[in-house]
Amino acid sequence: MDPVTRITDRQRRLSLDREGVAALAEWVLDREGRGEGELSLLFTNNPRIRELNRRYLGRDRPTDVLAFPQEGIGGLLGDVVISTEQVIAQAPEYGQSAGEELALCLIHGILHLTGWADHPRAEREKMRRREQSLFGEWQRKKRWSLIK
Image: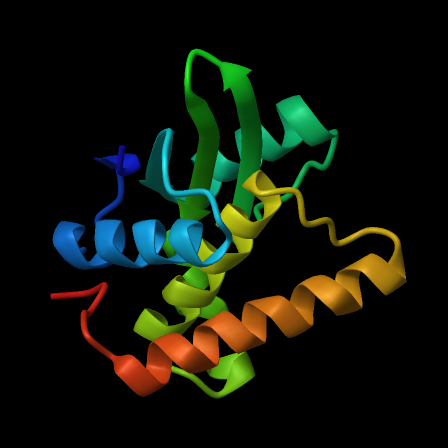
């Protein structure tokens, strides 16, 4: 069974290409050997992600991506929440487009759902290498876009 990706778009900053978003998410899951289950994606703004960050992680600030693994609960893989407002703000800092930054955030969130961690530092470095490897492969193939 292929993964099911549910996309909720509660933001107005980017015009998302839902098919492209789902294709990238499912491709990453496949590359991580997690080709089945249900993945939920929420695209939101800074106030909403700040609220979630404060409530669940105790950090009273906006962030780019949050991941909530739910494996073992009725075939669910988990939820990934991305602030497109934060994506747009930080993309120039990293010298990339909003679409590229969005892809990196999506990859990062999904990696968390598949067991990767970014704490402590050694784990963060391993995760970054995997993230960059997947991102590089996606960029070379560029079969889909995340933004219309």
